[in-house]
Length: 164
Image (cartoon, rainbow, N blue to C red; front, side):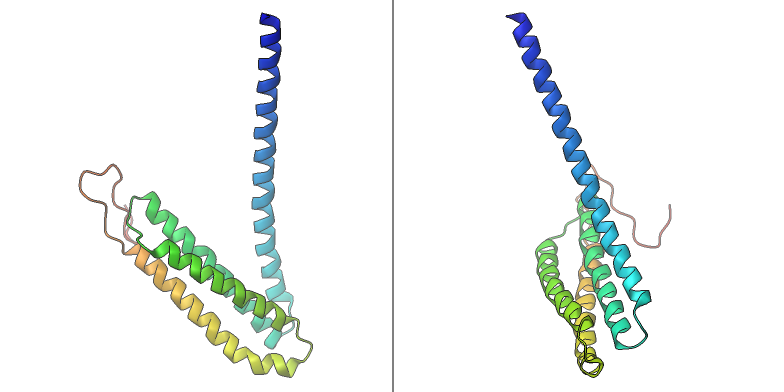
């Protein structure tokens, strides 16, 4: 009986180890895929021919950077026991708008008519500026969140630009 229990325990430990290894591998794969996408976008920005198409590529890069930095700022405030309020829900709404805008920019980049791209570019630039301005406002609001109440475990986060 003890031998059977030992064998079952060994199989269980082996299965847990294999599952943990698979989860670790999948996590690394997903992280590498995200980094790869960012690198492809940078290459697209610099290899696009000068003109409206390159500007569309730069707008996509600017939009992606603004949207990825906003949740990071909120996560940093949460990690330092700051108060974030409705900022996470606002960030999610802004991300949905940015995904739609990025799809429109991707379609605009593939438009065969250069004149049409040049005609639609000012409106696209305006919308990207609006989204990046909103993302900047969210980041600014998260950075100016009030410090945690006295007696809490985490010290307040240092203000930007101040070194200790």
